[in-house]
Length: 260
Image 1 (spheres, rainbow, N blue to C red):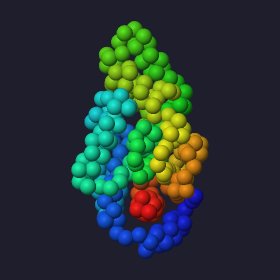
Image 2 (cartoon, one colour):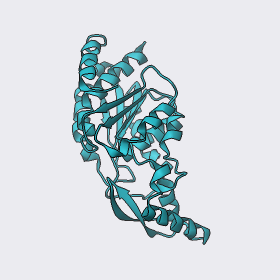
Image 3 (cartoon, helix red, strand yellow):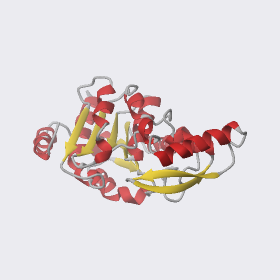
């Protein structure tokens, strides 16, 4: 499924089919990318709020400030807290969404939680099962395993990580590091895609090298008529902005299906 022409036509078709989305009280949790902040999702959050959705943007444990202060799966508790706040506010359904590592986590969340309206992954990355093939990451994975074997699993140390192709040092515990970067991380996307219980939207950029294996991720998802993998004429960084119309069109269909 490609191109803005399709999305524009679909927006026109669904705009008259359903009432204002403010009435449906759908909530959306937006997760930012690695070394990022909730503020980086502001434009997309504004577009969603303007369409009538309630939006939460938690600071995730891979943010610039917090990076890797909790294991991968424990980080999903921040999404649970955001969902709970929206439930108190009266939302009738919740969609989880994220960019890059946030998109990876959206898949992990959808694989482990019930009663979601949908899951949105924008340029989801990294492919955990492949990233440790990089020599620097592989060395750090081996180091973390050695520290755990030596009984130092809770001692903080420095490891190698990568973001948008650029290596950097991260200080955390061996166990937390492995939860994010080992080949058997709970963030392995094909495994999580196969366990989805709600409709799935993946948006990839045509010029985004991180999306080379995402077609396989999408193919693993259980069949659903509202599953979309949309490839847009954009880059990795440009995906959230380019995806706004696609997201709004898809959400209208999701909200409509939930009402029927």
